[in-house]
Figure 1 (cartoon, rainbow over the protein chains, first blue to last red):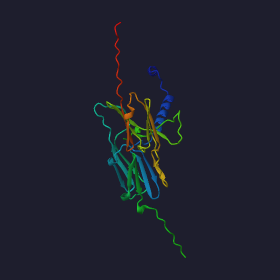
Figure 2: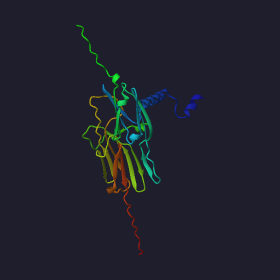
Figure 3: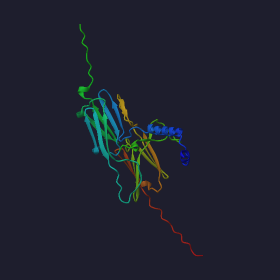
Figure 4: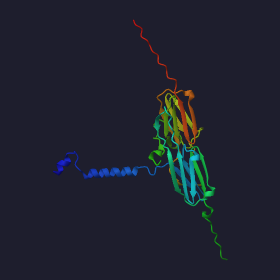
Length: 145
Length: 132
């Protein structure tokens, strides 16, 4: 018969238990950190320019490429893994390595010829001035007298 | 490299000691490897340079701490934020005896590299038992 079969597993199917499990699954999905990526980036903006900073510890600036097209900024680069020589034993390995690419849409078009970038203490700072033709213009109203 | 493990981890609030600054404290990610004669530690501490890092070894507890000056952008509005600036702190208990005088530390591109040379092993003394 049907019921004795289920009973053999020691648990009878219960809609409440199913609901509980569903709730747990949904909670787990929602509590997951959003978009965890490397490198972490902060963007500041003013009327005149945008400043993008990124935490890139251990990334050789020579291995870091910044490309700008209109209002899209792209960061690509790589971090070399620390290679173990024979006879060395690894105790902990928490720092990730490999290649990364990140793209951002900036609030407005920037002048790609005037972009300045510096990398100090493992923090990349890119300053992107707003394109001249994109700057807001104040329009004077002529009075009709 | 899109991995949850790449994010900075915030340290749990210290119970015994409180900080005077209200800045957040992060646990730096580290790689530790052991060579024949030393322990090499690498820690990711973006924003830290050789002047703002402190390394102390007390008994066999190694403490790393780094102070970070937050990048301030006056007159700018934060358009998007993924990370916060904060200090770094982490402590390790070392199992081997370390030759304190020969510890070397350097910081490059926000990565602290620490070389802790092992002390000469204490020579075992064999005690011979004389027959009575």
